[in-house]
Length: 117
Ligand SMILES: [Zn+2]
Image 1 (spheres, rainbow, N blue to C red):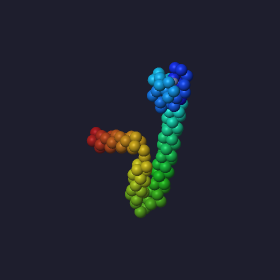
Image 2 (image 1 turned 120 degrees about the horizontal axis):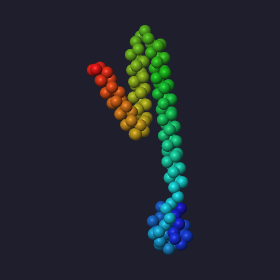
Image 3 (image 1 turned 30 degrees about the vertical axis):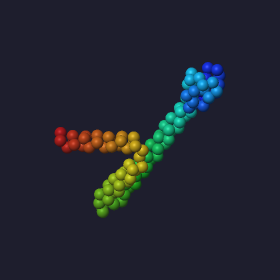
Image 4 (image 1 turned 90 degrees about the horizontal axis):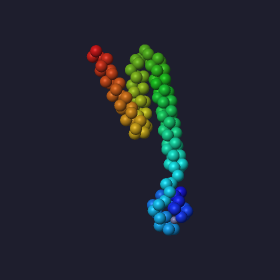
């Protein structure tokens, strides 16, 4: 809601007052956009928490699979875990995906550094 100097109420997206044409409208109140931002952050947090839980479950199941398949080869479990990890990355939202890729690159770098001291 925006209010012109003469007290007319205009929609928050209005550039000019619809009744007197004044361009000197008050700045719209922030609550709506702030609420959107908060709900967005909450959604992101929930998605992150769900993802973390999913990853934890995947890792735990993979670990139990490794124990169970210890004789037939831990590679099966490892491949399964990698597959699940890859599958979860396809569900990630863009920014998180980028972050994951950056983390992966960092891990690769540190691994290379460890190999060549
Ligand atoms: Zn007006």
